[in-house]
Length: 153
Image 1: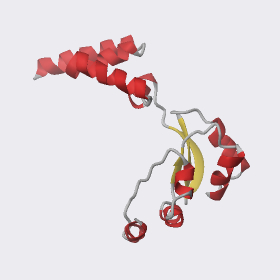
Image 2 (image 1 turned 30 degrees about the vertical axis):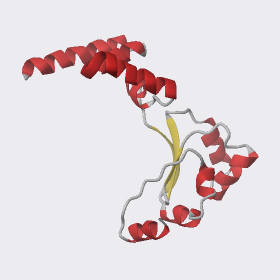
Image 3 (image 1 turned 45 degrees about the vertical axis):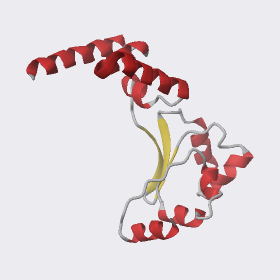
């Protein structure tokens, strides 16, 4: 992995690494090459970021007190803090309820509910899912679009 990361960087390749905890990187035997070869970091909100145990990881990647506070107070699933060679800033993906109802599913229970919905409703599960999430207007719109699309075929 160490050699692979170095080689890809020299070839101007792109590597995407993802972890739930910064400690995974800092406890890794290839921590140095991961941090050097992946100069852009997208940090998810973490209410525990200012706690001493977590703070050390954020400080190790160069965040100051204000930036750690931003990570700590950002809104989960909506705001992110990006650290890159060209700058640092808080970003928001601007997703509304419809987008979040699909990409914001992350608990085991929610994933099972999605699976159950797919099993029950088949290829039209998305509108049923939107209704279950309280987005009936969007579900109706989606159903209208599907009817229109099927009539054209």
